[in-house]
Image 1 (cartoon, rainbow, N blue to C red):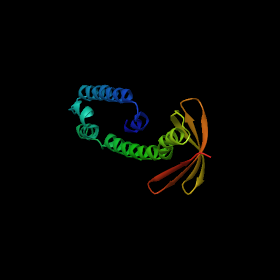
Image 2 (image 1 turned 45 degrees about the vertical axis):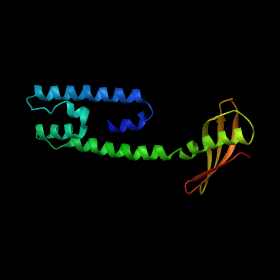
Image 3 (image 1 turned 30 degrees about the horizontal axis):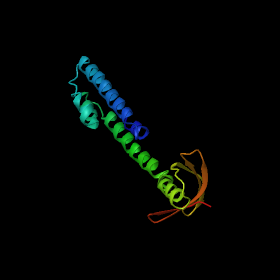
Image 4 (image 1 turned 90 degrees about the vertical axis):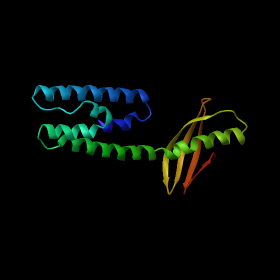
Length: 155
């Protein structure tokens, strides 16, 4: 289930549901192993450290640790997806407060930028985008990135 973590990054309730499902399925699996005559690993490993549960499960059933390696592989995949998700949109997130600052300081407005959507990647750190304001208006903007800096222009 580690792959699901990428989709629940900003939703704490989803994390609770994910943890509860892991415990329920772990308990069910542990119970089934005991009923089949195996010495099942403690269900608390599911809650504390899932890969330990999977490794112990493989050892208890004297089988290859397929569950462990599957968990490890999906965990690594989720880390890679997490990095991709975090990098995607970082220019948009960085531009939001800059648009608000321009609107307030240079235009004398009171609107706040709630979202920036890149509409065209021009290459080499240049983008065309739309900034959405909390007053219902939208603005065409240009974003330029270079090093650790982000520049926003409202034509």
